[in-house]
Image 1 (cartoon, helix red, strand yellow):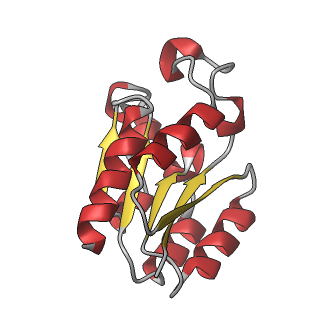
Image 2: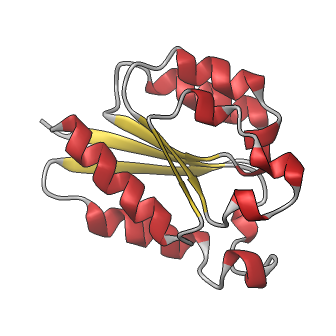
Length: 144
């Protein structure tokens, strides 16, 4: 039986590699997807998505209920504003790993709080895009 891990990326992550590379690096979102896929073994699939729209991300989280082994989410700036994403994640029963490419705690004070962290089973910040690989490995270990 194949299991799926859902990787969700929020606003502006479609510009990864182009937008503020001094903060976010030079890897693209396609590079991140390839990195995530490389972590998977046989019997695992990856659903990798990005949206600039909060409601789309909420819909994807709701659709994942009962059909995925876990969610890796980099909500971008929605981390700091979206109670709607938190509520959707609270209705999701499998593990959730929150990823931030930069160390949000070394940045502007408004970035220090994440609503998503209130639900996440783990938070990875400041590892660059390698944080996604760490999050995938953690979901795999939790899924057993």
